[in-house]
Length: 325
Image (cartoon, rainbow, N blue to C red):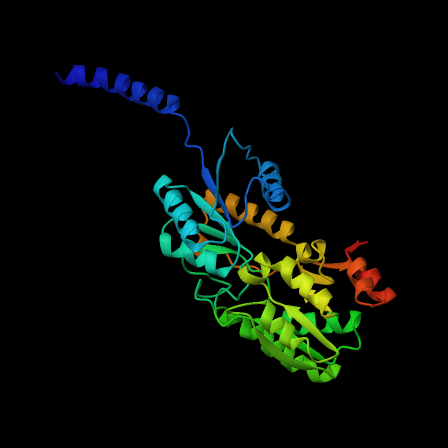
């Protein structure tokens, strides 16, 4: 009997090895979650897909990508996140702002989350413990540092030197944006300008129109779901009331805004792809530092400058990454 066991044992091990070899490798399933239509959001998502290809991940071959969009309606976003949690995806890559990252965080504490571009400090917003060691299941890339408030003010003053007061479009439901306001207030005296809050929590047109009643005024438009979704209205109001305005993202200027200064979002999405690779290879989000942008882009809309009666300084034009005519 013992001899039969010894004879059968190698055969059993051989069969188990063959069965294991024939078992297909698990293909990673990655979720791309956005407030916009992810398949038509070509610039950002092409960037992350290209970086994944460079890292050896080919969509449909050795990686599956689940595309979901909740729009800017939080309830739709929650439904999209709940569906992804049920699918038990390996990683969720999320963009669209701090409030949307919070929705994903509340839905799962186990699935790794790579965020790209929360508009607020992720520590102040309670998303992570620290930038160096996030400590949970969230890591990724933040869009802005608090000092951006002063930088936006300086660039606005360059393109519109006659501006004497600057209103910051602010919503109380984005409390961490206070850091941008404080930075602008700190920098304002050196530029001989005053800074004021333009409260847009409940509506946009009324507060902007009232603020524009005083001459020599300008605007800083902070990154917020409300300003992003209503950028066309903000741009038209700024031109109508002759308010030079600076915006946080390139697409504001592409849609008619005077000048934009902010992070290169495509570069950040490529960074998100590199983090996806590292997590799939065994690293934990808790140990991957949340990184600040390393590339910024300056975009000037000359057509809008002309409509506002502004002459863009040659030095500012020379620094621009893109000039829209």
